[in-house]
Image (tube, rainbow, N blue to C red; front, side, top):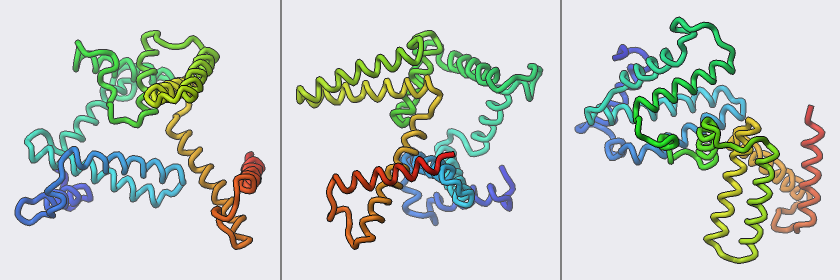
Length: 268
């Protein structure tokens, strides 16, 4: 175990106290892996948000929050007799050494591209050893964000040749799915409409993978752009003592285009 006086030792001691059956925190004692999991996901997103904003002070704090999630899960697992924090650390140490033989073993030096390929090969071997009868896609977590999981599913399938031949073919498929979506919009069949909408999103995830774009990151940037431009609309209306409620689509669209022009003028 880490020394009690080290930062990680202190954090582990705090977690143990919070979960103490006699003198711990009632809320912390009530938690389970299932109830804590949403907080873990939320903290990971807050780490990504701090990175996107370029705020290293916030990143420090958010990484601490995420580390606390690891400590929390580890403590509950230790109480159940499954594993402890040190086992988590040892597992990732072993994995990193195993997946970097060109650094910690006898394999020759690799380029970044060669390392990515080798990494995927080692992961495939690990999956086969862990569950030799499992399907190729079975271990991709269902709890991942939908677009991220779609990219991972299609990437794994692409690894065995189940992939569109080029970007043009993906775009053709997108046009096909959009046509089917339009038909269902006209039909009014809500169940079919949802299915076709999902198909469009899945093809978009495939397109993101083909173009080497993280779709979640791209959507976050689009959200930020929308927020920035809508704030511009609100600021311009506020100059006249008005809000969006006092405007109409035509005026707001003109102000939106004004904000878009400003964005383009700032591009390098």
